[in-house]
Length: 210
Image (cartoon, rainbow, N blue to C red; front, side, top):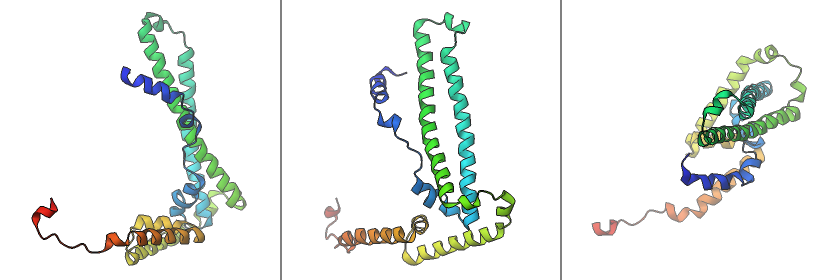
């Protein structure tokens, strides 16, 4: 550990928001962006949330195991600890505490994402909970037709409007009302920036460029 950063780390350790806030994806991100771009129909939208929820479950399980291992190491009285001097012991313990803190922060982030997926499923797809996967995958062809059709439409709109495909796709993922508000916000910014889009007179002398 570099001594110069220890005071900063100690200060950050006591700064509550970076430990207490949940920095995982919000519901808006998950509902309209992370998953919406993969939607084909209602069943596949539900399937995508379940798929991401499974990945989060596996990740949370793995991190929880590492937390337990870290706690066990901190409590351990193994013989080899006795052969380390006090400085070595403190460094090893400090590393374990840092590792545990990082794991705890990551768990909080992924926990929020998992909770948001569960909330979306319970709110929007409650009527699909009894479906097995085969009932969803039976509509695989319909899913790809809808998804690819949407991608083609977004690509076409992007070219016509002169907007990047990523930005166009993000806007089209929003509900109708929010989509229009985003477009209105774009028009307002473009209007404010209009003077910047006017052609500028060319300098008469090279020195004016410098």
